[in-house]
Image (cartoon, rainbow, N blue to C red):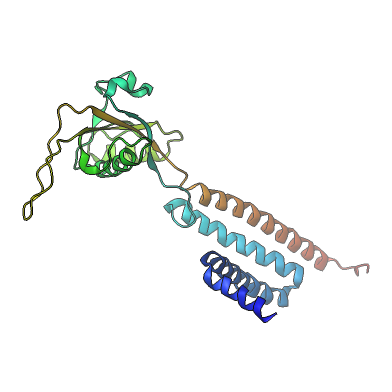
Length: 266
């Protein structure tokens, strides 16, 4: 018996998932159970349970609303870029419609290096080009980013005036559908300049004019960052409303019984 207990305690101490689950369960039982115990001693077991559950889900509705607004807490997947296609022989070899109908990228907007989106796209391109199946390159030193383009997404403001800022912010916030957002990263291989000499700086990479231009097409996945907080808020609000309505009807029934002058039948 002692060996079984020791093995169980050792498993709990070693496995962080079990330890975390037990910590959450004990915390919930201590929080809800202590409140229910205090309320039940004054209001009775059934009424105390109803009050405790209603208060719990009311608090969860407020917490979920804060998570929903700020995108924190128990959230889903963040927005991210995902690979759609790797055209290994220039834009003419792309099959996706948004690039095939405009291979010259005349309707696309360039992304300058000063734009924060450039760094994110550069990091995504490095992962996709190296870890692809099959990989286009073996390391980030084997290519140079030529241009980065983007198309679609939420409408940008036309100027920096206060009116355009406010109208653009309100319009994008109230938007129910989001236009698809694409990005294209054009890269080309570099000339192999051999190993770096001791004590010297690495040579500046030079584009190999004979190497094909590889085009990585990415699509913006909006993710579901606020889906879980929204579901939690809606579910908790519904349960809170049911509990509050039950308590309200119980109070009205009790007030009617107290207002009666004739004795109640037992």
